[in-house]
Image (cartoon, rainbow, N blue to C red; front, side, top):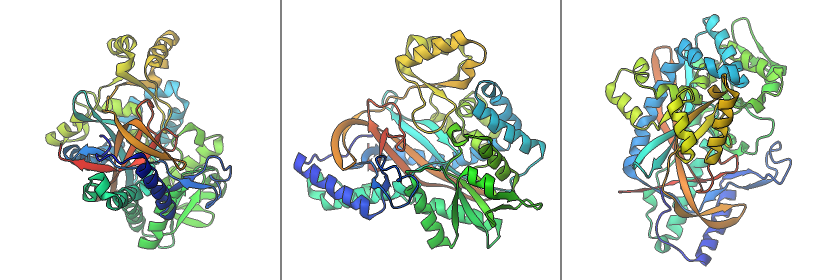
Length: 475
């Protein structure tokens, strides 16, 4: 994945960067400005253009097709695994001893199992993230996200921006705008949410988006609100977990009512990190929603399927066969798995201490900024071994992927600078079923994130990366 060819001079790059920043402002490709304290709470205040790559990153079309083909397979896998409550509880049993957050999620999950709570309508909006490993020339999965997958709203216009710039500066760049795949992620996610609302079949009900009290990425979310309203006639309300606790109740028939409005679909854009549960009120809200008949996106079981530990369990020999029958599909999934190990594998731990640059140490956390790299891997493993007990269970080890670095122009805060970068491709997927009937199982666009190659983390909202799009090549 390298920046597309055709190298304009510095003056042309500056002109393109100004045009790009203006285009972003005019087309809603914006985020809240960290410098403005109100930018995360008051819509329309303190906006800046989203951090972007000036031009798309190259990817051979064969890998693009492979990633797209995998999306429905991962969607189906998440659904199958979610139905095996004992597998989730057993696989995460050691993790719960050392990770309070996972433990609380498992408590809610256990309550639903004990109550024989069935989710007839199941909606998953997922994103599977990949990198192209230069050592093996293969596309390897970084992680599978099943809760609060970000940027379906903002990634869609990035492809449009890049096509516009290529058309405008075509002779200078020697690029073809048709090689940038279109990106309908926000429309497709809205369509899946609307279809789940349809299946719930209560005309007066709303989609409730669970949000953080402060959210500088709110405009990414508002794109979905816009399409739900304009294309599907569905109303969305935005609530924090604490607001749900204060205003919500479950009626005797299971209906979730928040501030006197019936809720058809609960769509989580918060609730994936311990920071989202500062008090018991937030946990109480999560349980309340789970006990209701509303469609949860994700349900507690879908949420747990997305944990790092489950990803590692699924990569073990013969585990995929427990959930899927089709040998060809199993082979396709396995082909994209990077090396994943639990820390009770002493040989691998020893190897990681000796060669820390070949591994990433991952805790049970979503959002950027949590993974451990380089010499820090050695230090952390030595410390965890000394602590003994179940301390090692809070982490998994993953093979470090080495993507090829390339020069790219990154634009952040109106300033353009050239840097050596690497890219990560995320493929969005939507899955909806009602009892035995699968209504949607499809890929839904993509997220391309590009970061300076010296940065180990990939989260755009966390400040490590910029939004990008794809330029498909023959090789």
